[in-house]
Image 1 (cartoon, rainbow, N blue to C red):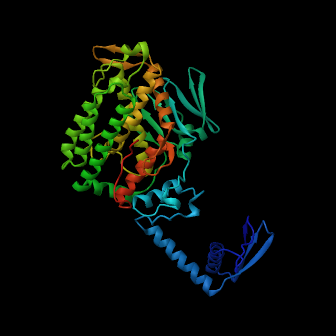
Image 2: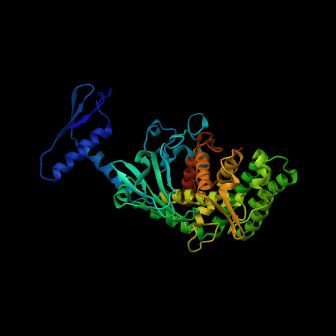
Length: 458
């Protein structure tokens, strides 16, 4: 007997096929163990009615056919085609992974009612990263809550329901009990330096998706696919840089904007990956030549003078902020790539190198101006930062804890902002967009969609 919460269906069989097949499958198991079983019962709680289901030869044959189909699906190495405009997608817990309308649209088929994709996942996540930056602190747990302690005092608490990842910045420890709980709930623990250099991630065993990784390695070994992907990455980044200057810059030279337009077109037509590096470098020089025009800090503008991009180490506060923001963005992409089951260290555009997450650097290029640069400009222009929050010396510029905390707030606020996706025309947070782009990249690797298309803003 199976109990159902609903009412008796208004059809000839007074039941649905999945319900009858489920009963038949249980009957087959009982027969396998030597029991005689010729019928089952469905009890519909809302109708307070029992419906007898006879185990006919036809139902047995249908059950065995579906069992064989399920076994074939389990052995398959490719995803099945997505449902088209199906009402079953609403409320499905796997809709955000399946992406039926997005995949169908990119295949140039009818994506759904009215020709517009449906956003079948939340616009933004309720859970957010939990950063711990107090040096010498320890993260423990109390029931379903993470507790941060230092010097015998409780500094902060965070419910597990509200935490998407735990980020430990520098010399911070975590108890074994808290670590076990995080692994059990599938919440990654990220280890970064005080400067946000990404060391690694601790977590439960991730997706066992060997076929996606095999497709990734095949694409990385295919010069044509590497060039196709690299063109898209560089052209998208340049267009987003131009959009940032056009929207936020004051008195930007028209030649700079026109030059970026030419650079994007040149990237799309570039015949070799190596030559893309030169185009990207030329576009970066144009972009950063106008970067200072986007800084508006009132009377304190001189505290954030910017004369060009420099690093390793950065020599001024703006470059220190940019390097820190890019490190945080790299961590974000690495986490999304690992969640998808791909290898973050094997890229298609950036050459693999020991200790460098090349694929994360590939996929973060289009987000550098839109997320990292935007967060830096927001922190400066809203005066979340002051010159006293930095230490400038002959060896470079470093950020004080106040500056790091302020930039983390600006960065997380940017990730939580809603944006309209240019391809699918629905709104979701930047954090959701990052996850979506990684999923679409995996679709392209497997051949489910014909091309990877970068994220641009209007």
